Image (tube, rainbow, N blue to C red; front, side, top):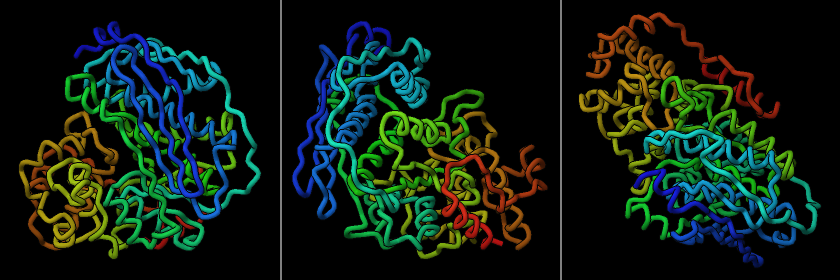
Length: 454
């Protein structure tokens, strides 16, 4: 269906409200959203409470956190028909807050707009009208301590868990939904029982049905939803820090010379914006930061290559996620393969993925996208073009030094102009970018881990 036609047919969307059902063990939140004349929607978020937890729905801050999670949930439903006006009936937003949400929606939907051929701008794509009131209730009267660590199941999560292992008794592994790879990754790192938090989020079936009928669909800023879900969870579990595993590489755009970034809500810009939002409109007793922001995917791969106990457990493939396997044919699989091949033997890499991707000519187009030989990167969470090239050249140098035959994709690479550029380019695995929000005590642990690579 066509963007402008849908906006004329469905000009209004409503965020009517939310219902909080709570007992001693569980909190269940049901949101009430509606695209006028199309459908209503009732997504849910369910969280188990820690033993002895207070009744959270009595607290003003908790209700504001619930409201904020609904603000980011609504974008998944808005994109069906992209109504030009969103009416928020259950909360009060200042002009600054409206601008904040519009910025997140616009950049978080950059891939959605690009892949659907939608030309728009931040001023005209949406108006937000707030007609509700601020939440009321008791003020928070307890202290915060410890770490809530979102786990995705990939190498980045394992690096963060390893760096912070001395705080294990204060750590909680956090996984949204029944993502088996992330759940098993948490367990493999020793997080289960009371130190494993696994809230459930449901999408309304009516949205999925409308997608099948041809209403608009595409990428939404999942990491922004996870940020607000983590904040809400940290309130319930009294966690001082939400510790992400987003690296410096996430800041690079996916579409060259544009602001379109598949990973927008993993960027440092969003990290800063989120903390500013928390400070201005929620409570900054909870600090949100990425432990790995100061290092690259190449450095993360270097550290992970030493954590061999997790090599048979980690999974990053979105295609094979439900079956907890590597599909071995997508951009994410190839990217992780390239990163690890810079540090591991050919046999070790093949053992991880179950196939020799670097000798598969059908992967050549993806290889060109990852290295930048063609302009645009795949719409996946992958590293920068520069570090992919560095990893490729590091592996080629090792193959040549050991007298081993080069795989097909690397033979092709040597025929490109990129090989001459990167063959003698120095690689500094000790580099650390200071543009981050990492607390000093955690930064010290990460820098120590980098030093161990020497």
